[in-house]
Image (cartoon, rainbow, N blue to C red; front, side, top):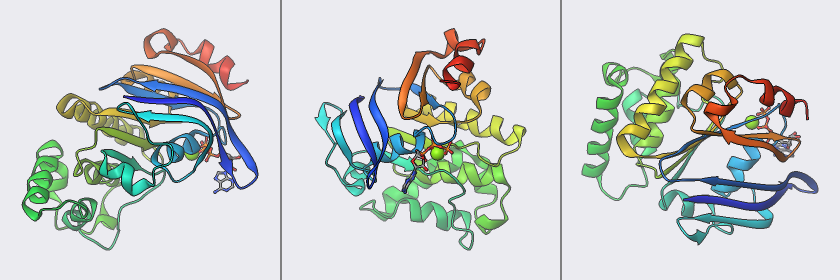
Length: 234
Ligand SMILES: Nc1ncnc2c1ncn2[C@@H]1O[C@H](COP(=O)(O)OP(=O)(O)OP(=O)(O)O)[C@@H](O)[C@H]1O
Ligand SMILES: [Mg+2]
């Protein structure tokens, strides 16, 4: 459902991605891992349309989205959860979820979607009147995920959802990701530094180093870690 073909992209004159090709099947969880600065976030930003691909092609559901602006991609079911903590601290949990669905045409649809998010994450419903700033790290990440789910994405782009979380919270966040796929058959591209943990939930893995895909395989066959270690070192 998503294919990147020979993508070249970067910032101003700085090239970052070098001939990057990736494929995601419908309902797959694909992990994108690699050292700091490898270009993982740039891949995600290129898919959503924040960074323009200079060369190559991006095909989503059979159509080129290479020239799309982010809002067009969002309206076509691609939702991006950026790296770092991105809830609105001064708004309540419920208000954050409303913000997530502001582009939905209908208030009733939005209310129904929020109800669905609450049934998925009862922790959020219990805290719906709380300021999001007072949530724990894991709960904030859950809220960021819940806010994305309000749009019922077909393709969910997650940039380091484990960032700043305790091991326990990471486990919870990753369980939530599995639940999302089970419930909605969402296709998920997840950028992660927590390699061992993400191998537990991913179907397939791409390793990016210095802007290039240096390894691609099923998560199961990469479990022992030795080939990944080698790939990280370039
Ligand atoms: N807005 C920007 N302007 C210029 N250079 C940038 C910009 N954003 C990222 N870069 C550079 O592009 C390269 C790739 O960055 P990117 O954020 O994609 O890496 P990453 O793999 O996500 O790293 P990390 O694991 O640290 O998040 C880095 O050298 C970075 O300094
Ligand atoms: Mg990054």
